[in-house]
Length: 311
Image 1 (cartoon, one colour):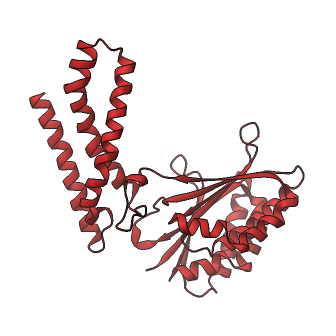
Image 2 (cartoon, rainbow, N blue to C red; image 1 turned 120 degrees about the horizontal axis):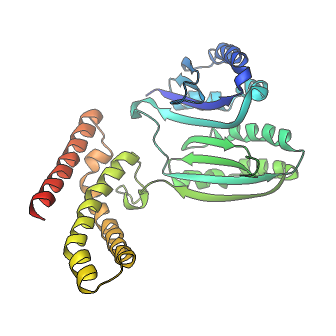
Image 3 (spheres, helix red, strand yellow; image 1 turned 180 degrees about the horizontal axis):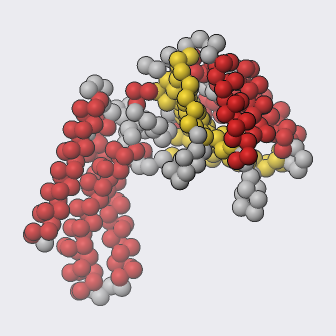
């Protein structure tokens, strides 16, 4: 299974040629690393793609992590700093997954940097990025700089495949030592956890959050939410709450939402357990994806036809 590092970065418009030249020099350096397969550079293509995208492919995850944490890469990043605007956005993608999947859990770290210490902080930031690239379960990270008048803090978003792996890195002696090094540069920082989509309703056999793609979760939630909302409105909402009790629409809608969310949360885990072959296929992935999506779309269509003809 090959692994790709996908990096998105914003280059100063007047520095585009310099950045392309810098990336060409970087390709010479990375080519000497074990496991390196290829590198591709995709310039911006507005409005669809506004950032530069660099794809670097390796034989294995360990090879990709070795490059991410290497002194050679850090030296290259130091040289590119004057060419870039703001953020670093790095994803680690296993190439058989067909794209970047949102991580089940993320840590969002906001840091207020002391005035005049910005350059030192960015240097430290690259140092901790190299260290965390070796953390088990890391799926990628993003650094966002302050936006004057909107956001005063530097924001780091670390994406992990599980809460246990994320917590292990946050609590690690290596990270604590690096945080202590940054103390003279910062005024304060805050860390919080964030989950994506509907993971609390999708669990694997061990009870851990599922690693299923978000689009699959969305399809199952819609599969249940649509009939629940429709039937509530036809059977309870309109005849009872609106017509008989003369309940104001905003209140009736709020009551309906409470029922719909509760029923959806109750039923989604039951359905997800029976769709595990599609949510997390272990063989014939493409066939399973197509079959599952086709089945759910057929049920969508059946619901629409039944509700249209009989209600």
